[in-house]
Image 1 (cartoon, rainbow, N blue to C red):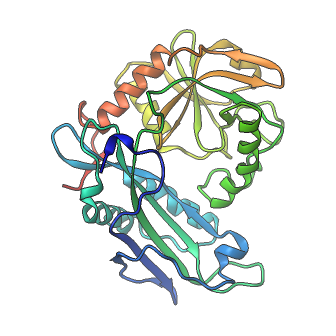
Image 2 (image 1 turned 90 degrees about the horizontal axis):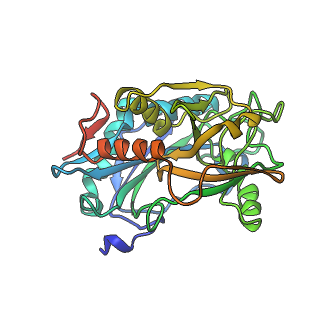
Length: 334
């Protein structure tokens, strides 16, 4: 495989993990070469979008090991998503074990160290039995597939432009804090509209007052103050990003910076010197400009800010084994 030519897209690998829930319990689960899913035309996932998912990566480290980055956090987050969507929790220890099994079964698809590519893992769960009335399904399927992906940004990370849209991402007491498929379906029209208007992404405000910064359609956001403090929005309708939480720890424990989670008003954005999006796919995406209905907030479009770059280098250094990881962050597969 030409690792250097990989984009961020789906490539079929040899094995995936499948487990079914029926009569109140999960079966043992299997690794299978079959990449198709056969369900009823009236399956709960098709009728009422009863589904949730996760995303994480496996890497080859500098010393030759294959590791996964904090899969226990993904297991916990998926459990919370399942509870909110009236789905049975797939046991967290079995989740981590299944992740390891899928990586081990697809070792030849784990890109070499230094290639810039990784093995992306997609655990997901959905209601599989026929449902017509508006109610939860009673049977479910949990699956994990793997696909090798290239760097999210070809040619290095470059600052992007966000807009504050007229759309809302999540209701104040809705499902914005869980990784439900329906949240992402709601964002598709807004992101296409943003692209059509020349922007890279949408920066959503809180739906109740439309005065506070929340997140984008697929990533949390962090800011850097003029005195180098890291600040990230606090809200009950924001997805708790594992990358963001890891970066906040890195900021404090590795870089010696003050880091806080608090409400951030859109009017404050002009006072920050750096901005970036954070998530599994790209780790950190520097933001060069935010446009709020004609009002522009500029952070520099030429290159990532100094603190953003340090955060990126430190976290990727931990993930790739160049820096010592905190206890429990790297799960060794081989």
